Amino acid sequence: MDKKESNVKKIEEELRIIQKKLEEIIDKNGLNTKQGLVVFRPACGASIEEIKKLIQKTMLYEWNVLSLSGDIVPTVLTFFENLEQLKILAKKDPLTGLLNRKQLNEVVTIEVERCYRTKQPLCILFVDLDDFKKINDTMGHDVGDKVLIEVANNLKTQCRKTDSIGRYGGEEFVIVLPSTSLVQGELTGERIRNSIKNIEFENKEHGSFRVTCSIGLCCYKGRKKIDPEFLLKQADKALYEAKNKGKDRVVSAGIVDIDLKSVEKMIRVNSEEKNFLFGKTKQK
Amino acid sequence: MDMKDSNKSLSISILSGKGGVGKTNIALNLAYALVSMKSPTLLIDCDLGLANLDILLGITPEKNLEYLLGPDTRVEDVLITLEHGLEFLPAASGVPELVEWDNDLQTIIFKKLNNSLSKYHFLILDLGAGINSTVINLAAISRFKIIVVTPEPTSLTDGYALIKVLKTKHNIKDFFIIVNMAKDKKEGTTTFQRLKLACENFLGIKINLLGIINEDSNVSMAVVNQVPLFKFKRDSIACKNMEEIAMKVKKYRELLVPELTLPFNLDILKKNINNT
Image (cartoon, rainbow over all chains, first blue to last red; front, side, top):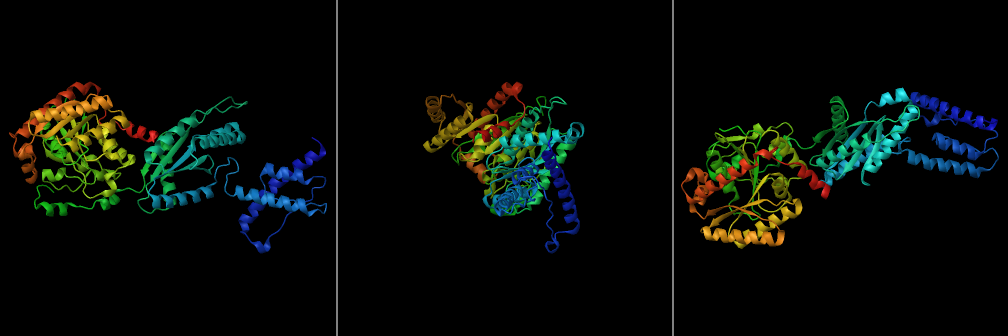
């Protein structure tokens, strides 16, 4: 490694450390623009292209570069490029490229509203990899990350263009299936479970291995107004049930907005009216 | 009651295409006739949203089939015992939202039914008129399909249309025909022959004649009195015709017993989705 390369490496490490520390400080103090700072360090000998590559590699697009040569153009261009990346990143999970949690919540809110208006059923699937912690613990986080990326890619091939897939947290994925009935959602769940099970992960150190997943799902028919959060909770509950029942299975929480009360409401001719029409009753 | 063939329920759907050809009456009296032959039977009103088997029975049930959509409602909560060996699952009136059940609702209800109906020999489904997707699906998931026609050309056409839809959509080929309201045996036979030839020529399937029921004023009198014909006038000609039909149905079940498993084949509802 030459001197310049090790210098860049050093900057990368520093970037990560400072990024982490800065986030801690901001977390502690809360956002206060009046007390904001710009933190910088000179990187003599490094070109703007090198630092740009570094930012892309680390995905730390919040970091901007200031050219010391006096030419303002590369500085401004890099700034706007970073801004563009940040806009995309704000919606996506950096590791898998799937939607992030915040964006996914927005999609669910929109789809719940659409379902209520159009009465086209909506299914939500929670997909969680079984015993993922073991992979991280025994084979390392790098292997774990690769598994997440491959599972994410597999999910992308399993879904239609109108579906939305997001990484909800750690090894938990959420799939939003618009215009999908409960029966269809269950079939899709089974298909995904089998497909993930069949991925063979190659690993030089530990040999090839496979993972299973548990899936919880529920369906909304748009018959009554519900909180989108409630829909996610029901699917999550079904996922817990799938885990408790022994993993590697699909559990359905059913249709969330059809219960006895709503059915009773739909029935318009009651027994009193029928009795009146025929003026006789044998059994009540 | 003879229970040696438990877990061997034969599901029978009664269909017509056209309304007013006597489906509900046939379902009801077939059930009574089967029970009189010591076969435990469940009568299910599947004329969803516009049910009237309860009217023919002169009862006003508090609960109905639709209640099974409630996650905690059990089949036993909705059943009404009409007499020893004969139970009844009523449906609701005035539910436009449920006239056309989607596959989800059908699956929810028939899954519950599949898991709790093993004690019956016969499950008789009185389906609504028309060829909407509910009628087609419920016919497809049941084992034995009875098509009711009358000598009227409109009824014959609608019956044929129904057979054709079931054949093309689900490749169903086994149909049993009842000719109702026939002036005499000859008119009944002619009617059946016409339908049979049409099915052979255009659909390439062989349909079976299950029976002919004579026109009989006792039928409408029983309806007005809200008493099943079987109770109202058992020695009437229509009632005798229906008892003969019941006997045949019972024989068919005995032949089918070795291959009977769950009463309703819900896989068809899943295939239904994949094709569309």
